[in-house]
Image (cartoon, rainbow, N blue to C red; front, side, top):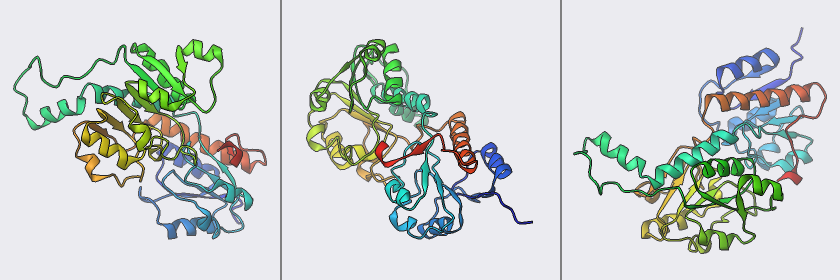
Length: 328
């Protein structure tokens, strides 16, 4: 008797518990190796799947969707962001798109604070000294960083993650400012103890640390461009755990090299894993390989959301994390 279960194709390795549950519920094809699919492999996947489970590194654009088979009805993205998917084209072709929002808030906010501390306290430089065996003992002037307490933190994007960063920063004694597409309700501002700036230019010119926590959309592409980066204090630090495309990476590199900006902590990059080589060489920059959401708990919760979205869709109901173009 033929298998009537949904044919689900997963593009990357997921936590074992997630893969096991997918295998129980669906006719699933799992990734054998943890490497990104080629475009040809991705096209083959959409041709034979009822449901595609891609990750943020899989570019499901109009060209890929044009090759999709008639049975593809759901793209259940393993990730909160969906800028890797042409959602509008998918909808036009009758293909639903879901994501996994909300589960990575605390993990990403923790990493934001980790980067703030790493840059301002020069932690990687100290680590390098120890690993090289160059430490000759304590010195009163060695590797002097800066105290975060009392500094002004500017948060660009005050959604769930931005608010979680604000709460953590307040615990460190920081003065929190923010810019957002929409101002928060007064009671939320009071609870968080934050100050709203309608003008991003005015905010970035006044803060000591700027945290990027907004999504990548057409309106936020290079929001931190050369002109806006030049407004920052020469003693300021910029941290990005959101999307690399929000910052003009070449402009940032030039300013970090010249000392126009004091430092940066980056977990995401404008061109994915292809990072400006000049950026790698700078001692005042902390670079991480997109680790913001890399916790066991977070990855499993993402997988659980993917499964719930597929199962709900299979049962004939609206998936709880359905993405529509108006949301973007």
